[in-house]
Image 1 (cartoon, helix red, strand yellow):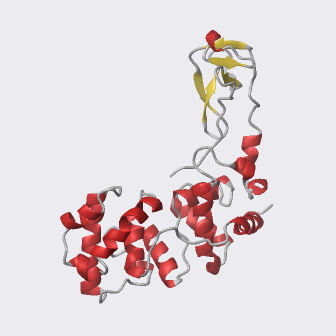
Image 2 (cartoon, one colour; image 1 turned 45 degrees about the vertical axis):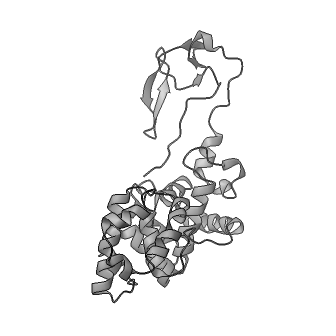
Image 3 (cartoon, one colour; image 1 turned 60 degrees about the vertical axis):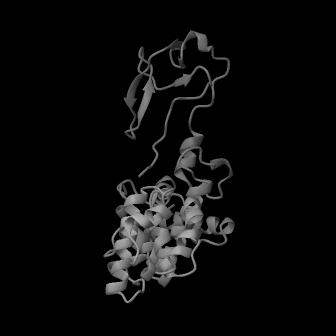
Length: 280
């Protein structure tokens, strides 16, 4: 199966369960969207949505925020990650919007990235959601999902590389939906820890799910008092393991006696084998 064929099947499957692929940030206009997306960097949408109602009541537009101060804005977003830095960015961005953009949020990525605190990812989200500009921002969820399902190749080791490869698979008019589909799938199903592969609608097309299925089954009847680990190759227990890198470059627990990676945790019976995962 080519990556293009895989992408078509994966997104078709995701659309069946994610009927409204859109941001979960609450906003009513482009100003509120810009502020919300900026605040959401390294913070959950749920937390941002808890803060913004009172923030927008106090600062309904860029003019009111430009007339405020970093220290005053900080008071309204103190529960957000990095509140001091973000308060500074918001104030400076509001001043620029007033002085250079006529109180309007600009509609292009190149203009948006001129605003303090607005990187390429934030700019793409705002341009896509607010103005329909074809864009495919890559956050931690998109990066993880795209790599796990093998929508991108092994060389896609950075968000920029993932973005470029994904854009080659999809027509521009589908970039925005693909972005939201992967975010929502990554947030609620293909989580960084304990992904729900057993109930995933895309698992039959997913390389990560296939590798999980090939992990050794749990060992029953192990005796933790004999040692923390059990080597199923030599059939003995031990306390301190060695480590070794497998062919994928993943560091694995190994038996100190024979070097085997066929090792299990005595208390749970679960394999210590790990498969390559993708985090940014």
